[in-house]
Length: 121
Image: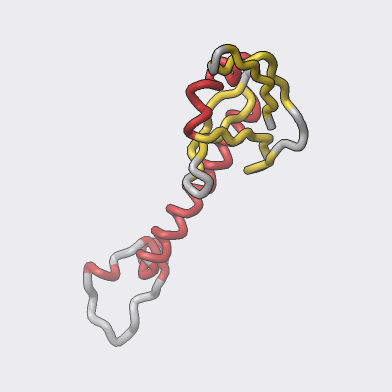
């Protein structure tokens, strides 16, 4: 969590000091910061100074997710990519389950059954 100390002069707020405070949030095994849409513009120089980079957007909380650069940033991206690849493979296998089915003996040949299963058999 980022803690800001602000100072107000004539109704204008100035950032006086900032620091990282525990506890951090963890997602995909990486320490992250959630920054709301309203605060992103004012905190962008601070985030860059702390070495944080944007890794995504959380639609549930409506905020941006930032991680430290370089290792946590790449780890977060790698886990996200691997999960997406896993979900796409599962969906492909679910939609194309006939790839692993054997041709029934009573069926005449059809191109519909010309699948990798029959190639290897």
